[in-house]
Image (cartoon, one colour):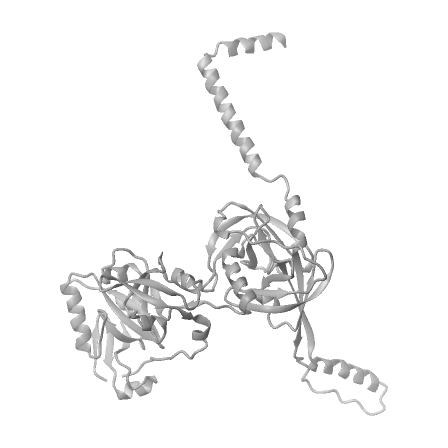
Length: 490
């Protein structure tokens, strides 16, 4: 044993000093990285759970549901039969199905102020007749609905508590990074208070809403967690648990929490007004594609292309169809989704500068915003369908001039103008770009077209100018959209 040790010691002593120093530095770096990695991993979430749990609540709702009843034929039982009482009791039980019954649902929420304001999901309390809140202490209180926002699935409740309630604050969701630890707290599957840990899997997820800004997490979120908070490691709420992606209905590690920076704006408005008040520009828009950017000779594929300007703030300020909105109130607009969110988060009545590109040149317009909720309450016009006279095939599209008969068949107004697309060759670029029979071409090359010759002239102008794409504005059932078609070499 000793000889073996001596032998190894001699071998070590024979190693050059420079190599030993390099080895020592390497080992030190490895140890430092290991220590740093261990330091980044929390040994336990217990302290954080103890800190935030008193502010998280379970929510139970009660809703009156109309009875369905059994509409089948009643059995015929002879009077005085020994089975008469049995069948009468059976019929009574069946008829109870016609009576209104109470349906209950479970969810989660969290207290945001000592005086009893509580945030949850709109779908948790939707159509509820009564809302009961259970606190971590076991105390139960009836809550009143302050306001809701179905667009972000957020609701604000209020309870009258005999004393100040423990509450949590919102954090800045924009500071969260992919890989950051998070803690979800709630009432999964009606089992009562429960915590689950995970990381931020991704940010900026969209599901279906115009104002969606979801944080994706692998922290376990199940039915009943809806409306509960998602915490960062400082105990701040950075999201409201809203939805999961799952083929079975149970957690598979893909959960979504509405980002706190969206929620706080909604909650502030609900608390102040009992409803949301979003800014409204009053334009219809679509994303700028590469084809559209080339057709409009834009320097970059970004911005929001205006397809229609109904009566409203945009029209009053001079915005026109074909304008590309590139900045709004000093903020760069990358796409339509971003513009919708920026405008919606801007105060109603605020005067803002909107920069557009019109015919290749920048133009700044002053706009005073309206209110989206009021605009959405107004009727939306409808239009086009399809039918027939003077027609010709152009760029794979069979188009016809609108006349009185066609306007009547399509339910269009007397002032409707444009060319009706009657057929589209499936091998054409027009078909590939989504044009279909029934579409109405209202502009070509950013000018109105009322005759087939107008369309052909604009196509030739684009070719003569050396452009690769040709821009048209179409309407489909009233909805406008720009389409850029590739020009064939001639």
